[in-house]
Each structure stands twice: as structure tokens, then as C-alpha cells.
Image 1 (cartoon, helix red, strand yellow):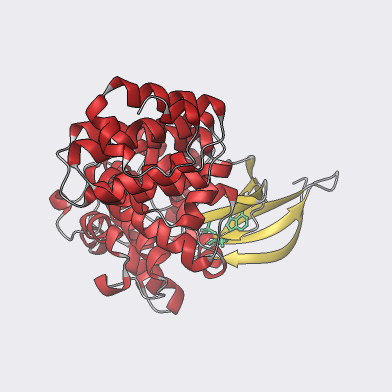
Image 2 (cartoon, rainbow, N blue to C red):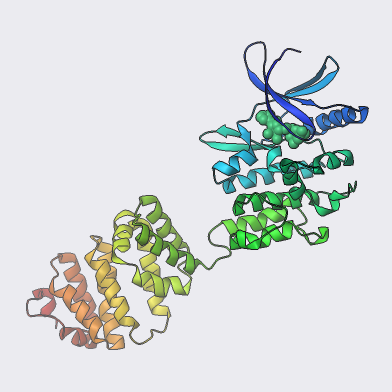
Length: 419
Ligand SMILES: Nc1ncnc2c1ncn2[C@@H]1O[C@H](COP(=O)(O)OP(=O)(O)O)[C@@H](O)[C@H]1O
Ligand SMILES: [Mg+2]
């Protein structure tokens, strides 16, 4: 053998894993099984056969296998730790879909793992994050191994917790849904932060994951997800912000959070702007939330994410024509528009506001709207906007009459001359 075996890394129910170096100094891991009976050697060879047939980025590759002084072994890349260690140190939820990808691939290739546990998933540091790789494909159909794992130590209890009920009796014909059960338990461990995964305590699961975990871990095989793909579809639904939860709740919460945490980072407010724009067809967001965005956030949206936020305002402005306005809501629009007007330098936005307010005040006969429009016109100095006001007022005499009452004597002559 061209490897020098050094220290024991860890051992499972069946083998020991050491680090080792090759002739040029590369470090690998070597697995050497405990073999007391011929059956066990057969099983190890079978493990290698199954494992070596799989080639996927989330499945540990086997680099070489052989036998040394009558002991079979295989060589693999050396991991930084296993998932069990990793869960204790970092939030691994983002890594869960990697395990699922590996299992989808294995199942598609006719391989069932049957011993999927955090200790049989290895973590490799990569680009500042981790890549997970499934290892230990030894269990296969061998029920002998089940019994070695079940006895005793705290470690093996972990494995008991991941083992589907139909597998406990050493039933040989369990199918891929035993792995789905184990995946459910792994997800449970990740999101609950508990050591004990034998029984599921829903109080320890964030509510969005309760459905998935309970379905994956149903005692009755038929009640589980049919495939890891199905499971991941639902996983993706509950982990992506919009599909299940009500978008208006998310937007409202995010506004509150940004204010509470005083976190106006560009990334955060950019996401908020995008989130609102993607949901302007949601009545609550467009009619209730948008006009009441707190001024500090509004400023940030206008100054930093104008290109996105302008389209939100356009959608808002269009919605005014469509909805029947509740009495009093006109005043909310007027205050919102004044707030926008005071916090923007954008000509197109100011023009939109100036076109909207006289119409809104006149058609709904709202004093407050007229007053706000008056405030704007009385202070107008921009020639282009002055000409715009002239055009609007000269287009409708009665509207001009309504607005007149709110203008001071000092308004630009171009406007007063048409009144
Ligand atoms: N390539 C590796 N790099 C680092 N650690 C490993 C590697 N392979 C296995 N281990 C560690 O050794 C333990 C036992 O290996 P495993 O293949 O699961 O053996 P068993 O079949 O006895 O369970 C794993 O839980 C893991 O912590
Ligand atoms: Mg193992």
C-alpha cells in the first residue's frame, strides 16, 4: 500500500477511519472495516461497489480501494468534519438541499442509503462555506449491521433516531422512503437544535418546517413524501419568502425590522424595494403599506433605489384610478405624495405628483388635498413644473376653481394668469 496511516479520525459502528499520506505528501482518509466474519468482508466489498458507482458532488468519491495484509480498505478525500460536528457550530439549514441533491441522485441510480445520519455526511470547507458529501454506503440490505448499531452507546442512539420504523426489525425490503425518513430527522436536528431526535417535538420546530418534518418522518411509509424531489419542492416553498406566507406580512415585518434594527444597509433596502415591486398587485401592500412607509425608509428607497421604487409609485398611482377611494383615504395619498415630493429631486416623480393632486382633491372634494397641492404650488420655482401646473389647471375650469382657494397671492404669474 502506498499510504502511510497516521491517526484515527473517528469510528462508526463498522469501521475505523484514519488520516493517511501518499508518497508525495497528499493527505487522505482511509477506512478500514472491523472484520471478524467473512460476511463482513463481503459487506465491505459491497459497500465499495455501491459507493464507487455513484458520482455526484454531494457524494463522497472513493479514490482507491484495495487490500493490505489481508485487510480491505478504501481511500477517500479527507473531510474537515462530519455534519454532526458542524451542526453544533453553524446554522446548516442552507446546506440541507445539498444532502437532498446527493440523495436524489442516489435514488435515481437505484441506491438506497439506509443509514443516513449527520455522522455519515461529511463537510468540506470550500469558498468560505461548506460542501457536504454523503459517505458510508455500507448498510445496504445487511440487517446484521442494524443490530450492531442499535446496541448501546449514546452515538448509536443517534442512529436509532434516524432509522425508519420499518427498518428496525431488520426488514430487508425497505425502500427509498427509509432515506426520506432519515432526511426528515436530519432536518429536525438542524432546525430544532436538539440532540435527541428519537421523538419529534413540534414545539421545537419553527412552524414553517413542521409539515415537512412530520410528513417525512411519518411512521406509515405510505404517508411520507413519495420522493426526495417532492420533499424538496415543499422545502423550497417554505424557505423562499413569498410562496406560502402572505407577502404583505413579510413586507410589513421587514419594514418594522429595518426600523427596529436601524439597519438601512443598501442590501436590505434594495431587497425591500424589490419585494414591494414584485407584489404591487397585492392590495394590502399597495393601498395600505406603500403610502405609510415611514419617512426614514422612504428616503432610503428614493435616494438609493429610485429605479425600482419609481415603478412602485407608478403602480400606486395607477391603482388610485382603479380602486374606489374610501372617504378619508384621499388625505393619506396627499400626505404620502407630499412626503415623496419633499424627499425627491426627480422631475418625473414631481410631475406625477403635480398631475395627481388637483384631480384627486377636486373629484373627491377634499379640503386637505387642495391644501397640500396649494403648499406645493405656492413654493414652485421650477419652470417646467410651473408650465405643467398651468396646463393641468387650464384643462378643467372647475378643477382650477377648486384649487384656486388654496393658492397664495405669490404664486407664479404664469399660473395666476389662467385662473
Ligand atoms: N473521508 C473522511 N474524512 C474525515 N472523516 C471521515 C471520513 N470518512 C469518515 N469519517 C469519519 O469517520 C466516521 C466513521 O466513518 P463511516 O464511514 O461512517 O464508518 P462506519 O461504517 O463505521 O459508520 C464518520 O462518522 C466520520 O466522522
Ligand atoms: Mg457511519
